[in-house]
Image (cartoon, rainbow, N blue to C red):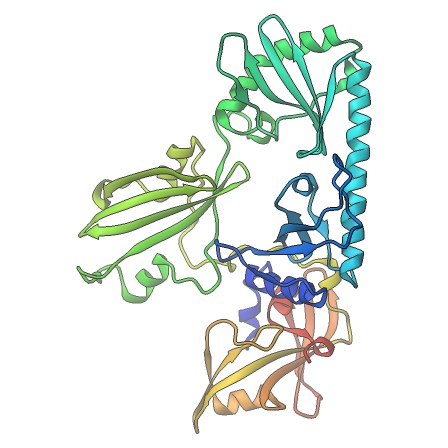
Length: 439
């Protein structure tokens, strides 16, 4: 394992974060599974009566959730879906997590109550939207009706209904109102009337003006990196050369994901015959675009997706191999290594011949993980030591310097081998676990 291997990854892969989260949730007796996108972990939290619905006062029985990062739960159904993601990693028992959810819900209700009071101070009629956990009021002018919602980010304009025209939704990212700047309902009405052109523009673009670069006509489109160990078109071209051809009868499907205005979209193109493809752009509500095209006249995936969504195409990436695996987050504070710790990477040997050893790494639960590797037997036995029926690579952390660690490998007698080497902290966390947690 050379030093060069450790300098290209700056974030923890999504798969590794899922493993960390899944193991922690299992210790809380919360089973999780992969969602339909095959990347997001989801599950269900059962309550014991400590969390009540804010509108009815009845205890909530259960709540579906998705895992964000490796340490937060985002609830999928109202009223809890109105809450920000709830941290779980430091909870020792599911009862502590349930208490935390109850506290977050109580804090949101208190916020809703305070915002309702501010709206009533302007002599507006206010109702509570228990499903969205928001305070709701309607401001009417001679030409428009404005629905105001008070939530986590403040009081914002959620919907505008022109008199005699078609209502439109205002994106959640649009800047909230500053109620303290308005001393009366008539002052607020005048302010909202002047904002109509800006609200209409935000509704057309699907994103808040403040979130766009100056002078841009639409929110930027971002290509999502491919999943770890995915086979990309670029890898095929680099391996076989651009002059190779695909078998005429072989099925071909090309997939790429994009992020736009906080929503993930998937582009998929299936070859029908020759260079004729059927393309689809799929969003949370189904197909956004679908059509047939010939490769000779195809402008490019990013350009097609941008045109379908009204987005700004993402900048072209420089040629060459990717520098990081898909997705991931910077190393969280509580996963950081400390000087003096011994970390282990366990592997399963698939074949061990007289000249070479073929092995595959394992995840934190000991299951095979990632692609198999091959080392000369002498090199393998120089750095890997037996651990029960398997093998492991041990290292000791000498220093932690920012996003890098200085480490030394340990031999079978747990003595340091050679000089200290440098490794990105995220690489350590992505491939190793503290020895104390490896069993």
